[in-house]
Length: 292
Image (cartoon, rainbow, N blue to C red):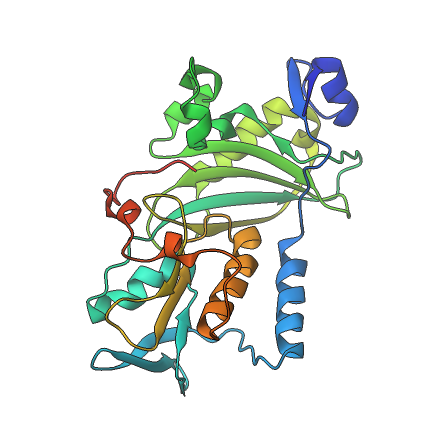
């Protein structure tokens, strides 16, 4: 990590406002195109014999007493010796009809995508308002919300802002992210978009003239201890969980490998006992907003 002054920060990203006094810089940080990642994972799974059904909503689990035998979709049913529920923020909803309580709730993050910009910048930009979401930052001596909260946040009740921007290869810029907790509602909102555009156009004045091409929102799962739930569901045969990853793009494939090892009788590369459903860390108040 390097500490940069304002001039050095603008050398990395000329779009930054002159009011930016400095930044930290890590040349090892990176970002990815999630659409391409998902396409690559699907292609890899299919090469190994998986059958992937897109646009197929799972409506319910098939249960025979305390055994899970498959899933029911809107069009068909599928049976299996073992079912792995890897449904992120929707996991609790699928399990609730069967009396299985899983402390996974959803946080909503919204994104704005602009047209290709006439200027370029390479780094992923992470602003100070994003720092308040991290528990280890809040635990530092002398931490204050004063430096990590934008004045506009107080005007949008229930919405926090996590400041970030990144430019795609084609020049389009992704701007985000307002965060709130509406349940299983993944629609972008006027409040979230207004906060995003107001804060980031202040930090990056050249984006003000760009046209907005797309907006969307996504739901990130959260658990009381910010760790995923991986492994069998106690008391239910044939059912395992792999859900609750707030950083799913990175942790998802790794936990998938670990669970596959455990289910096939191999020695897992990492102790899955830390992620079991009945661990003490999941007994906290799940209504509370937790920090990463």
